[in-house]
Image 1 (cartoon, helix red, strand yellow):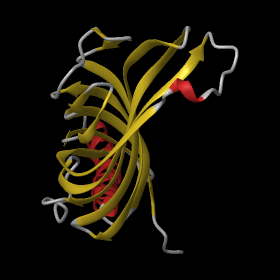
Image 2 (cartoon, rainbow, N blue to C red):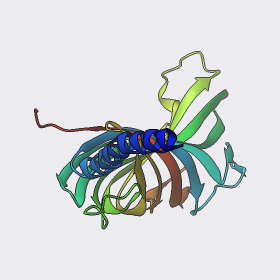
Image 3 (cartoon, rainbow, N blue to C red):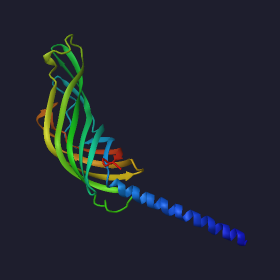
Image 4 (cartoon, rainbow, N blue to C red):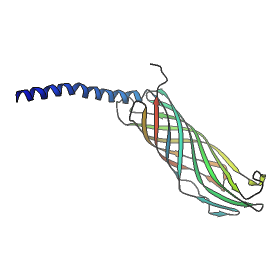
Length: 226
């Protein structure tokens, strides 16, 4: 009995330093997260909060949905522990467009590209927390284009294809939560509100406002040499 008690105490004594070291390692991991830059991708849903074209307008037949797949790549530079400067480039296919011109049938789509510069603020950066919420605000260029991927015309590049584009400089607001799961890998969930207003219109409408809901994975790294 005494031997068992001594052995148990010895095992506990050996386990405690390892547990403390693991806890310290986790704390260091979350603290180091607030010192590193980020590069990653986000996938999610582009939820339309603007206009949608009618299914048929003149020579055009459109098929736009209220929700579309959204992809975004980004790089974020750590200014200091509570703030990062992020550049992101996204793409969403808002829908297909078919129109007939000069006896030819043209099939294409409307793509929107948010090209944004944002400031990300981490209010709990000083805490050794597993989850790090953030707020972001910024702006940039929203570029939209109606392109043609297929035509029955014998001259694919003829001027009558009438591809159309539009640009808008506008703001972005959002927020999310980062979760560092390792020294170099992190996960996140986020949301962005992106007001998009093409002054000259794109595929008969002007308002392309949207809310994007995304999940992402990021690479965490430091530019400092050890």
